[in-house]
Each structure stands twice: as C-alpha cells, then as structure tokens.
Amino acid sequence: GNSVTQMEGPVTLSEEAFLTINCTYTATGYPSLFWYVQYPGEGLQLLLKATKADDKGSNKGFEATYRKETTSFHLEKGSVQVSDSAVYFCALRFSGTYKYIFGTGTRLKVLA
Amino acid sequence: GAVVSQHPSWVICKSGTSVKIECRSLDFQATTMFWYRQFPKQSLMLMATSNEGSKATYEQGVEKDKFLINHASLTLSTLTVTSAHPEDSSFYICSATDRGSGNTIYFGEGSWLTVV
Image 1 (cartoon, each protein chain N blue to C red):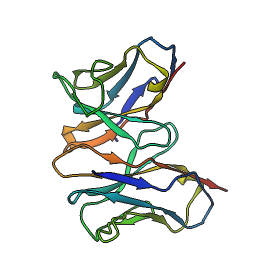
Image 2 (cartoon, one colour; image 1 turned 135 degrees about the horizontal axis):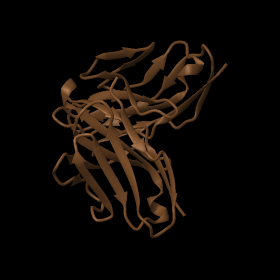
Image 3 (spheres, one colour; image 1 turned 30 degrees about the horizontal axis):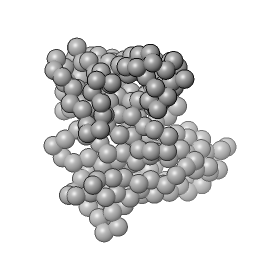
Image 4 (cartoon, chains in turn orange, green; image 1 turned 45 degrees about the vertical axis):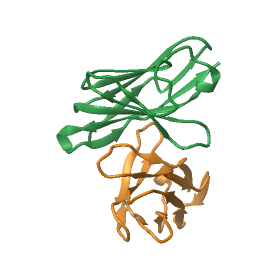
C-alpha cells in the first residue's frame, strides 16, 4: 500500500544549525510530495511541494528534492531559527484526488 | 489567507457520552471537507470526506455510525463522536477545499479529544 515514513522526533537544534528531517515513501504510482508545517495553535500550512521526480520544492529557506530512486523527500534548511519550531508533516497525494497520506509528523525545537 | 477554524481545540468527555467538533471555513466556501485522525506516534489518517449537502464517504475501517459527519453548509462541517470510549482519544483535524482558489486545501488547527 501507500505510506509515508518520517523520522521520529523531537528534533532539538540550536539556532543557526543545519536541519534535516528524513521522509521516505512507498507508493504504487507517481504521487506528488508535500511538506506541511504546523505552528503552535495554528492549522497545517503547506510549506513546499514537488510534483515529479527530481523536482525541488523550496520555501522560507527550506528545501526538499523528490528522489524517485531512493523514494525520499528529505526536508533541509541551512540555518534554523527559533521561529521554525513547529511540527513538520511529510505527505503524498495522487493527482485527481484530495486525499493525503501523511507521515507521523516530526516536532522540531530550536533553542536560542 | 484563507482560514479553517476548529472548535473546540481541546475537549475532555466522559466515556459513553457524545462530543461534537466543528470545522468552519472562515472566509471561503468549502465544497469538500475532510476529517483526519492521529493516534499517538501514528500517522494522520483520513477518516472521511464530506461534500456539502450529501452523505460523507468513510474510509475503510471507520465506523460511520460512530463518527457522524454533517456538512450542512458550505462553511461548516461537524464531526460527532458518539458513545465515546477512551480508545477514541485522539487528535482530530479537518481540511477544506476552496473552490474559489482552484480547490486549494486548507487545514484547521486540530482538536484534541480525551475520553475518560
């Protein structure tokens, strides 16, 4: 079946550290891949997405590349800030449907 | 930007009682709303899809008589957990599609349900 696996958190980093949150997927077909972020007290917000292999999604300094050969979509940021503290969800979705398949979410804590 | 609001954010109820969670699109009309559930250390899982004015479509394994979904208007969907039990304690989150912006999907902030 289709599934998304994320690294367990929480991930705790100091400000300006490099961030990687691993995400791998299993899919029958060619889904689009997403990273959503949930800040405290707010809804999930789309952070970035990629719709096909080798596409790179980027936003707010975050990046993720759709790697078909390793079925991965790892989230990276070169220098995190305290304001990046949130829960990050990796997800996939097939075209023609609004149904997402999410990972477990990874909580990121950035310390000043 | 578009906002989806859920209420309540936190709720504690006694075993055997029913509890209702609301999901509202504040500044757009939502043709379709979705309800997800997340148990501890598990993934967010889609429970059901609801279209305004019609019956919800439930995912396999979700009891439709236990999780009643009503989507009576283009801005409101409700999830009622009937005869709640401790195993229903979970994080429930809704999302809605905004047909005015090419069916962009927006998520609510989620509701934590604890059944004691």
